[in-house]
Image 1 (cartoon, rainbow, N blue to C red):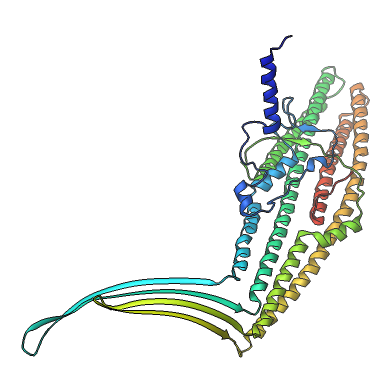
Image 2 (cartoon, helix red, strand yellow; image 1 turned 90 degrees about the horizontal axis):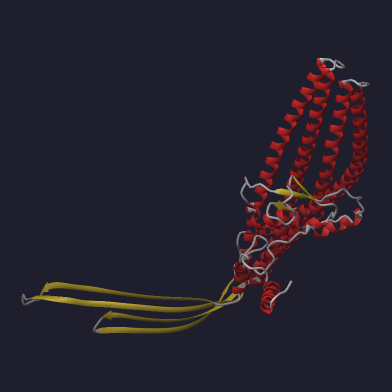
Length: 486
């Protein structure tokens, strides 16, 4: 094959364009992050990106996907993609982001307290009035005219000493910003856990649906075998009726799992903030692995760095600063003001012009206030102490959650291993009973019992996989970060 020089140059230029400029027709803003204007308005990360699909890198398989649907296509959603969509579009989480954006105004207001306040006013009025009267000689005369007045005023006020209120307000604004960041992080963790649970539930329902469909195929084969044996007289009509009943029951299970799968995807769509009736396939790449966490280290990390703990700690700091403001309220306040005013009043032909400049120093000292300041300080002290009790209680609850979910993970891991062995034994037993029934050495009731045992074992095994990952997600929620099993 021969290529012209112009073809090679064209291909090379396209390659350079893709490498340096990226693929064409990309949207300006995606659901993975806020728009550039929002970042400029509040330069903080609005949400974190979780690469959760790398937690358990085992054999990847698309549940319910056809051959054309592969990972990365528009019809297949990984857990990581679902989480990113939820963090970008979930309405409840959007409220937490808005609360963080509002803190910019608090910070500006706190810094603005160190600047003087200025006010200006200007007014103008005009009155046209005439009055008729008779003078002593009896002549009718008119008096009055046009009265016009203007007034302009400019004042500058600055509080020199306000009992450190400005300083503490600025500190509280910073603490409030950190508290809202912690609340945003806690909202992220809660939303991620909800998306994980919904994703795992959808995977569970898809697995159960596939299992029910496979068992329905086995029931059809069983019905054909019973009909064949009945045709030659080796079994009674009861075997055929029993096989038909088992097939109908299995078809009812399929309808139930299909409905449960639709509801699970509706819940996942709700959490992602998208259209509830959108359909997609899920990527199942989760396997159960041995738990090797250091529970003492996890507890230490959780009780110190969990967003709920940090949020309460910043609230305590805010109340402490308010308490200092209340204690310093017994001191006087000092301030100064400067002003300029100009007024012009009188009849338009004979105006009176007034000008004035002034500089004022003032002090305000509230000496006796009927113990109002004492009452306010006492309530603030009670609030601080109550928040400290809340902090101690939150740490205990977090430690309790970490230890409980850690023990639950250990139990679920052992349960999964046991159920895997039980499923394998039930599968072997079913194959033996199926062969015995085909040879005529076993009854339909014994085969039915083997089928029920295998069905229960397979359902329990499927549930154990996703119960394990749901518990791992809950443990991550209590620790305050993603936990990865090696």
